[in-house]
Image 1: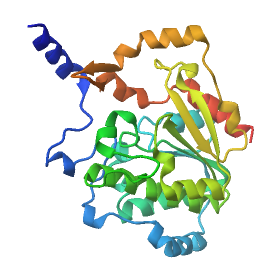
Image 2 (image 1 turned 60 degrees about the horizontal axis):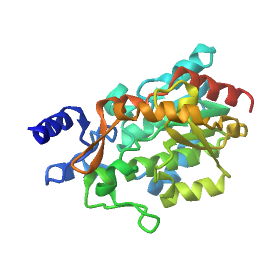
Image 3 (image 1 turned 180 degrees about the horizontal axis):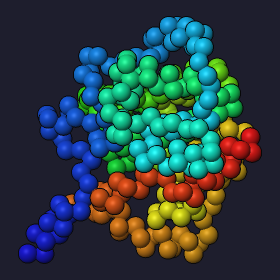
Length: 289
């Protein structure tokens, strides 16, 4: 009876990241999405010459101060807009196929937005992390010697495609003197992907460790920010011992152990949203550039 009750509770509260079946090898995780057939996934890196031509031909107005990239909640855009700075949001969940970074058309739409960013403007990117973190490690199988992971799974290949195209976009925007910041959970292995590592070296991107709990988040959520904002180190935060204890007590709301494994609860899904306090701190950091 007790074991049955535990299993039932797990089934209700656990957000299943992946189940090993033939069907799920063809599907992505909750935050890793595309509407494009894999045979048509766009490889921006291989098309970089024509993308540079697109940049040279641009004669439009550079009127954007910020691009909120992958920010489904639009919190970054709201923060900049609240200070009367023009900002745009690029996210497939919010805007559908036209914001699919894995399609050629979707990437072209991203480029059109990027070309509007002013010199000194910023891209705040929170690319899907679910196929780079510990909770899905049994699926992605990433390691220092295997950064691309287990590409038997479509979801892993998709997550790689998203980051690869994002990296090419950030590379091109860096050539236009646009700043950028990438946000990931501290355990994410995304920064091991060779194209992103190479870009980080080329532009002298700086890594900063912080805690979302220091910005009124419900979780302590140790976070890595990597970017080219000169004042990005000012986002660094540390937790006091009493704060750590308080957050540790709330851990059960976000994680549950079932059948010997740790799973994320439904509450974990919403934890990806940035708090207004975090967005304001990042805005201040950008203004102090």
